[in-house]
Amino acid sequence: MVKSVQHDLAQIDNAVYQAVASTPTPTPALDEPMPASSSFPSGHSASGFAFATAVGYQIPSLSFPLRMLAAAVAYSRVHSGVHYPGDTIVGSLTGGAVGLMVGAQFERRVTLNS
Image (cartoon, rainbow, N blue to C red):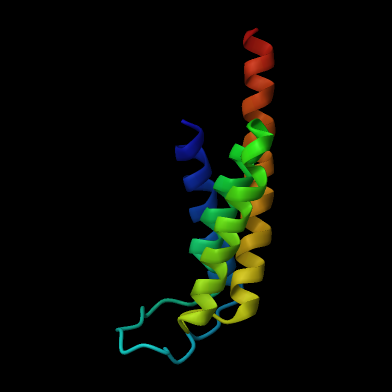
């Protein structure tokens, strides 16, 4: 349930940003076909940080390793040439914010049901 809500919020967040501030996709470093959609913000970065933050909120011992993996995902999006650094930074920040909201809501529901 948490993963589903988190994914839906990340998709909404991504759609809103793309509608407001559309930037072209950078020239790829690889010979891969590029999507026709905007590159702002990075949905991969947003999803990675939303997951890492929500799980880290509930299981603090996993917070650091999961955030490092999310950071590696964000870096890989820039390194592979499919996003500008600002795309991944905004995606990471908004994903982290969504993760905090989901983690807090989940904790509140668990507390209310106890």
